[in-house]
Image (cartoon, rainbow, N blue to C red; front, side):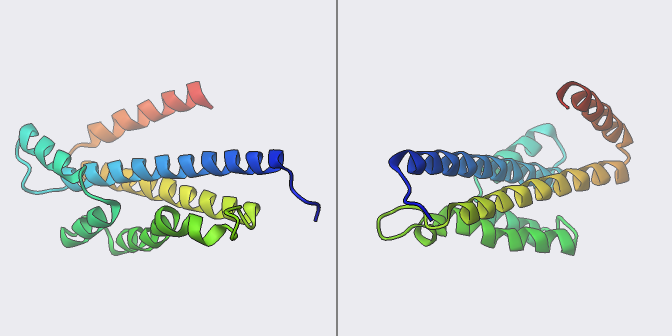
Length: 165
């Protein structure tokens, strides 16, 4: 393998930072979906004000704390709860271990393509979980006599697809 140049390392760094940013951004969307879903399904919510209070409180939780709260409140099916729990390991690797485990003694990424693939996998998993939570919320709304919400979301999604894809 040829020796990498400074320009090569700059390109690797730019790709790394872009991939990390996408993954973290997607994880934040997952956290927000969790916060909303846990609040929406909370039986203590009887007013909009109480709902906003619980939502704002939930938004202060870390992903791990939110997953634990969802389990405690039996917010999701066992399979979705397990997927969330399993994802914590991936997310924690990204946030706490990715750099340390992926660079050599010079601080340079050892195997960039493998690292980029791992980061993309975390991002895709976060997106998949966010979508699963959204589907769960729509099913919850429909089961609680709010099929109108489901229909509005369906129509909005179709319009979004028409203009964005």
